[in-house]
Amino acid sequence: MKTLSHWIGGKPVEGTSGNFGPVYNPATGAQEKQVPFASVDEVDTAVAAAKEAFRTWGTSSLAKRTAVLFKYRELVDAHREEIARLITAEHGKVHSDALGEVARGLEIVELACGISEKLKGELSTQVSTRVDVSSIRQSLGVVAGITPFNFPAMVPMWMFPLAIACGNTFVLKPSEKVPSAAFKLAELAAEAGLPDGVLNVVNGDKTAVDRILEHPDIAAVSFVGSTPIAKYIHTTGTANGKRVQALGGAKNHMLVLPDADLDLAADSAINAAYGSAGERCMAISVVVAVGDTADPLIEKVKERAAALRIGPGDDPASEMGPLITKVHRDKVASYVTGAAAQGATVALDGTGFTVEGHEDGHWIGVSLLDHVTPEMDCYRDEIFGPVLSVVRVETYDEAIALMNNSPWGNGTAIFTRDGGAARRFQLEVEAGMVGVNVPIPVPVGYHSFGGWKDSLFGDHHIYGNDGVHFYTRGKVVTTRWPDPSDGGINLGFPSNS
Image (cartoon, rainbow, N blue to C red; front, side):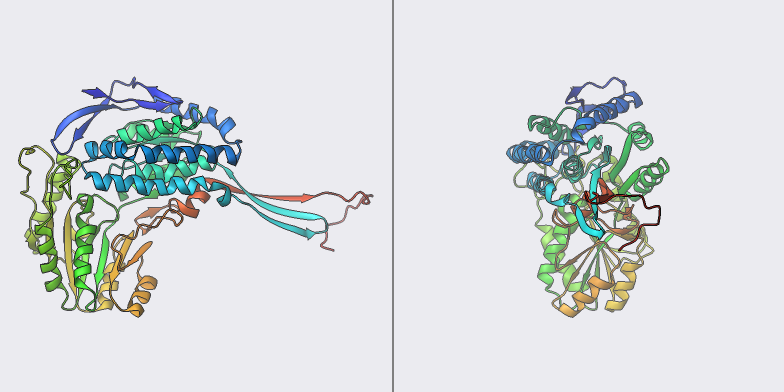
């Protein structure tokens, strides 16, 4: 069995804690690797390496930083197939989905390549006699990221490229379930010329997380994961004086109005609910069907679902892979059986699905629940699996009230041909990201990603302009250069004359 390593100070470092976590192939259910869990001392070593590297990286020129990032972008692009294979082997998602993940991560690398534009300051001249005022942004120091299992490459690339472009050094704690992609990204950064210690990767569990949140030399922490953990990260990190952005869970709604193109809506519902086996914080998990749209829409979804090909992620024919662990598979299945017990209609039941020859894999088929109501567990909880619920309402107003009553506000979508209704929706819905006939409205790299309510804790969204502001702090400089003709002493209060 392969034993993985940390990446500290520009090189692989074997774990010394004696504690390891299993890394499974979800398609077979077999443990193929083990990953070391960092001790407090190992986290401290990584932070010390980052702190030392910051002494020179933090004062390096923008030209030097962007030269490394341009080379890094080139290397990640050249190795995207390899990175995608690592993702598929540990997460289970199909290869095409893994490739798409790498591509979306590269968007932020490209944004970081243009950091010179993002860090331009402001200048006001002659605010008073021979007095100028400028505003600049400077790096924070050592920053950290804690990332989830569902996007092992993309979410780390949402964080560290922008952070290091801004002049910070970085400690990354990837999910212990999917560690290899992050390690490969660190290797490629070193190959691109990133100085030792600027990017470090420590694997681990709660011990590593808590040390990151408590460490006095870490200035800021980025997190993506479930809402309960996001709350914990934000509360603990801020209590220790850190800047924190913690992105939590979601229950994303897709509103379908009676005038919508139902074929487009059905295609979109399939893609957004069942893509990546539903293990996405931007997955559509609830369709809100207005008026008479539910019955025809459900039939169209069922027709499409019947043709989905579920299988190992490395099989080119597969469109959906397994779930990350057996425990998670069983939990997802329990929501389907629980919904039936609570009065929902199970239009599609994927709980008994398996793949011939891979019976021990973490398989589940797609499920579709009809006549779901807000008090049911399948509606109230983030399932994080291929389960789509349909809630029936009579009017737009009823739909918007239902959606805005949700404690989450990550992403949402409306399907309609009515521009007026779409405009009203984007202004009235309480969510951070809105799609109009777009089911998964993940912003491009130069806009920021983040939700509202219990989907985000902290003041900054991730990447885009918010990301630049999160990884920097502002400074205002007021300057006066006396004219050679000036002289004398004046103890009076300065005036604007």
